[in-house]
Image 1 (tube, rainbow over the protein chains, first blue to last red):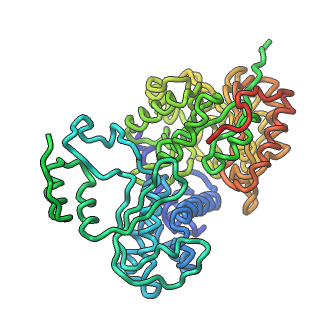
Image 2: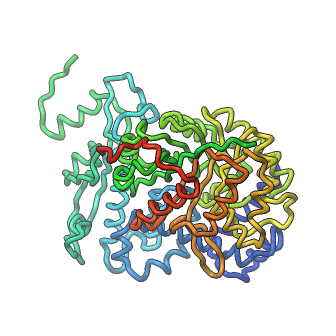
Amino acid sequence: MDPSLHSIQRRLITLLTTPDAFTADHPDLLAVGNEIGPDVARISLYAKLSHSKRIKKIESVLTQTLCHLGEPFYPLTLPFLKAYPPNSANRYDNAKQFFEFLVHRWQGRPKDRPYLLDLARYELAVADARTQPWVKEPAHAGRPDNPAEIRRSPSVSLIRCKYDVRPMLKQDDVIDAPEKRDLYLAIVFPRAAQKERVFEIGGDLAGFLAGLSDWRRINESIKGLDQLFDLELVEGR
Amino acid sequence: MMIENIPLIGIGYRYPLHQWTLDHLSHFDVLEVVVDHYLTGGPTYRDSLGTLIGEVPMTAHGIGLSIGSAEPMDYDYVERIAEITSLIGATNFSEHVAFTRSSGIDLANLLPLPKTRETLDFLVERLREVCRIMPVPVSLENITYLFDYNYGEFTDAEFLIRLCERTDTTLLLDIQNLYTNAVNHSFDPADFLDALPKGMVRAVHMAGGTEMEHVEIDTHSFPVRDEVLDLLGLMRTRQSPETIILERDGRFEEPDEMLADIERIRGLYDVEPRGFGHGPVAS
């Protein structure tokens, strides 16, 4: 592999994914411009366009979150870019990066509108559930021919919230302050559905389902289940 | 004398326009499927597209290969998109002569490559591997570039011609991209078209861009400019593509603009729809 090609690609892409590229006379931008060509203004414009495209992807996933965040959103995008350069073309991945940025910046607790992180968590879970496979596919099968193993469908997202943000996602209602209470939600995208289905579940069940994110032997799983639901289980063949 | 194909004329399939596409399927001879959308779109996307597989011819188009990245190629990704290409019954696979990622950063936007002998040799080796894995012929698309490298050794046309000849691939000529580059870098697009050997263009993309900060931007979100349609007419004197795809990546609230553009393209070729899509399809 040609080292010079790799080197210029690395320098160029690193520059284009930092806010430094937005400033036409930044030394790093000028240095790359001198190396590859004189169109420094064009390099800067390209960086802004790429950043704008990425932000639109994030907006498409965290729509309500950013609507409630309001004006502070756009000034946050530059420190976000600096802290989290893009590593995926995927909308969900970029939105998740922005969520992680918010968690870190607010240290888990936004100063005002403390429900914002739960709202983002909810929108991310919906986006994740929407794109996960509904039927078992070889890449996710684990041991496909082993009937003694079960798991939770990847198209079920589980989240824990401190605020009930569900009413905020209904577009015909304007909710400013959601109810504060601990709750667990299972978000499912049934096959052929256009919209998610959301179930509030108990903490114990959420814990049980969370433990089934990977294939597990049924008898190990059921050991927890009978205690959870006070069931008398008879082992089958 | 070149015998002219009557091209299949259609659009790039986009999930937000799924129902609209179904409702107007009789207008389209072909649909171009972005394989990366299939890969990441989930069951809803796949089920929707599934209603169209077998109803109308399809071609496969990639946006995530980053063929020009000077890093080890992701063979797992190439094999997955090869599977999708087969699954949808595509007759051709196309990708961009560009790179989008390096050193763990994915810009998700197409970046130009320096048009040097070194780059050419690197791309030839990379493309031979892609062609080995792909179950259908491969076409390479010309991209727009807001900036270029000042140490390039070839013109755009020379570089693409050498690349296609050495890898036995063809060109997916994006005429909007050609127009954009000609405006932004002050060259005559007719010179580019004249340089292409007859028969090199297997497929065509048409789209509409916009101007921003005195620069032409290939947003692919507006009606096709008259100048771009004129270039299609000029191309037609030397090339006989199999497909002409109208691309749209935004402003989905105005889909009927696309119908108007399809009619303009049909008017230039004086061809009626093939009738593959027999009216609305149940979704």
